[in-house]
Image (tube, rainbow over all chains, first blue to last red; front, side):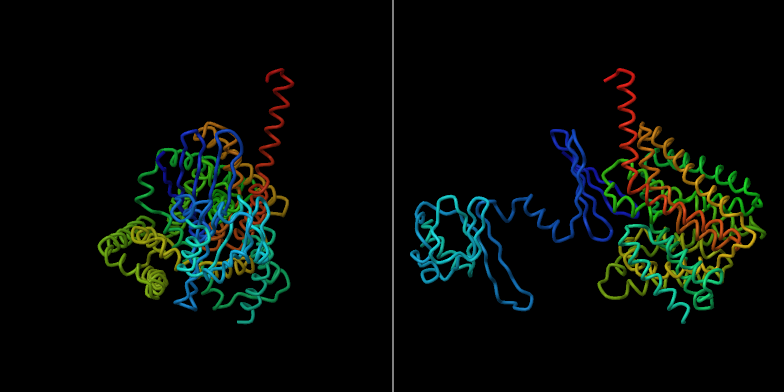
Length: 160
Length: 377
């Protein structure tokens, strides 16, 4: 379970990890800042991908589970040009309480200030759903707003 | 300035082409030099400016090679590092020498060609491993450390050729003393150097550039080969913050090296060099001898001959160091031979890097067919 690190002069550094079931992972930090990720199952062919630095950080945060869980995740967006503008985007699984109700009937915007910007149903994704869109159990909604507005959404709409 | 401008524009176009084809650019530059120079269209001729830029390119190449010679890392390498390196040298240097002598090349030039024949291109090996996504393999480790070993041997060759015709023992002693002083100075100033190089402003940039130029000037003053001293400086400074130095030097090296390669091509004189078929024969021998050394390394270090084919596919290309040797120590006649060697092996090597695995697959299929034929599973 320990990482083995190897210096590769002219290339960078390689870190290798052998998993408990005998598969091997290797991560190579290239001198140009990119990262190559190799996975080699104990049986079968090795696969490789090359990641940019931001991509590898995003991958790292998914792996560490620090920011997000698959069902319920949020990100806060800050713009370098608009220093004090903070927008949060959050996903929620649709709860029983709003099943069968439309966005208009729930009056989400007027009651919470937040907006539903997308709904995911199975393999289908609806971007900017119509106000008459009716929720079903199993849907995942993507809601945008200020952090406070999202809190209100959780409390009043989802009744968490 | 016009010649330089034309050469750079042509190289820029060729670089775009080489990226698109995913081929190493070095052979393109050399051929561009041949075409632009007196032997071809006669558009560009070497002058003082190009000579100076060429020299700077070479110094930066050797300095960044020195940065890879990290005494601390080399010391901790296992014996497989030396084993692979010794096999590589023991196969390729004698074969290169024999090949050159067979072409009727005089002994001194033949030794020079043997050295150029032996040294693989580190730049192309690294690019091949990264672009073909082979870094995962244990063989990749062998390849990059083989390049380090070859660099060490290159230093010995440079020392050997520098001492030609002078009071060799005295020169060696003087060079060794200056190099020791260089290492000592860096060791002594290690802490301040590290904090200096870790700054965020332009100081590390100016320092890296000046260090190389000042060292070359000092080498001239002290009467020691600047090539060796610049490599030693790189190796000594690798004990500070090599990543920073490498990053600072990188842009200079890349630009000046293009000038170096293209003007190397321009400087080539084909008069008196072996006929083209003989040169092609030498290049094919160069490809095959790396296959032989690769297979031996694969057998002994990795216990699999196919590992050797993998190693071969990344190390078959000769490049920047072969040309550097020819440019610094060789006559125009050696340059022509080495240019042919580099152009053919680097293009061959690039094909091997890309399609080497297909070769391996073909082999595996054949093995399978064979075992079926023999009635084994």
